[in-house]
Image (tube, rainbow, N blue to C red; front, side, top):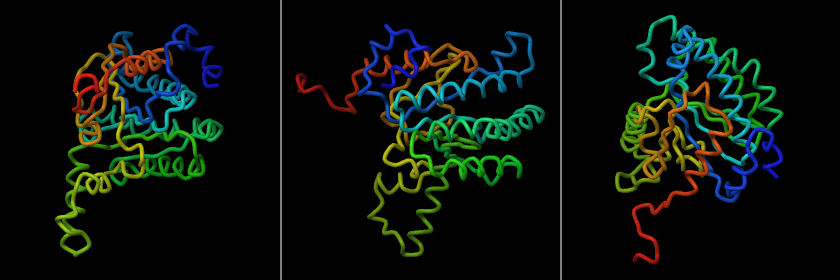
Length: 260
């Protein structure tokens, strides 16, 4: 059924290569290349970020139609505050404009907004836009559009350790009870369970690094790097990347039965 929804965007032959029963439950994307996309066109960097938001809308709809359960997008890192003030201010205004226009479509498509990161450190107007979007889409039970906003994986893990240490100190958690499942419960992605760990991580723009993104959660994710700048990324590229994911042999440290 999902093929009918997006076949106008995707080549039917490509869709035939896609296994609808093996769509990744959780896809995470490092949306990279906005600035370089703009510079190539002799435009200010912020023009790339603006176009990148349009790509977010397109990819959200395609991912939802494909049956993805969680789409996590790296929107703003804890390190991005180091960028020029003009660019940071523009990036802080983007969620306001984005959610104002896109929330009705998210509701129509049964998509729920979630945010991980240190929201309390964002400007008040940005916080309000984010929290309003979360509230307005709270009843949707389709795909979760999860933004990593003012997020950094190392900071997330430090915060989790601090909370666990406090729980131990207050006799709410026994040291011997701490295991991988416990750690996962204290991470920001716990609200996404049972799909808190991405099966597929995509980074656009040709860069091949993780940039402090979901370091715990991607322990067994398939990593895929594409040269396409984020503003040029589209449904065809997403389907192509998912097909590549489906063609990989995921062993999780083990071997195929015939090789044992």
